[in-house]
Length: 229
Image (tube, rainbow, N blue to C red; front, top):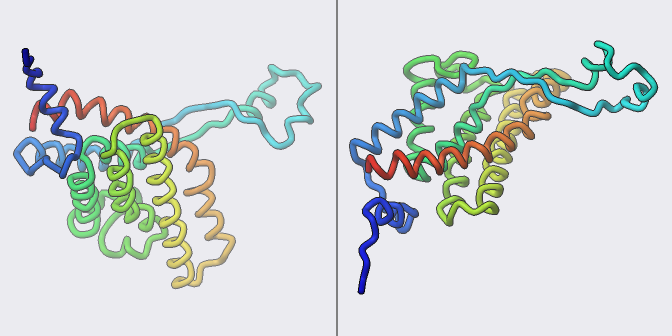
């Protein structure tokens, strides 16, 4: 005796990127616009948190008072984080390859031609900003991450998608920064400082939060995207 699967299960089975079955509908348009808005909001959002670190000179503090204010400040780092890259990974998991690229492309087009939605402004002059390479890299990052995730949301694929996307963004961002620096004859010291600020320890935060963002994107897709499409 054949038992029919529930409709939601049928939709979920179809929505595994087998031949890119998802088509442009009112639902997909709404969700794509939502992701563009989410990326804009993330651009102007700062997450502040404090975490434990092991400084290079930690041996000098072994025999000191472990509860003094100076020691606490030395072993704990206050960090401000802008969650743009995790949102990019959320979009890759939530929208997939085609609509994810569309959402990021719309965001960039708005920033260049419509309204200054980038962190440091907008307009065509932003093409000469050190930071634009990181933004432009969102497009291939979404493409690569979604291409990996189309094979399934296994632990291996999630970790690989986050790694490839984050590495792509920072690699292209650094190359673009060096290119603009060469064009504008910027000093090596200033360029190095900028690169460290954008692609130093931040890469670790980007990767950790991106893994979480992929999981949230997959969970959200199951309960929202499938129902609307």
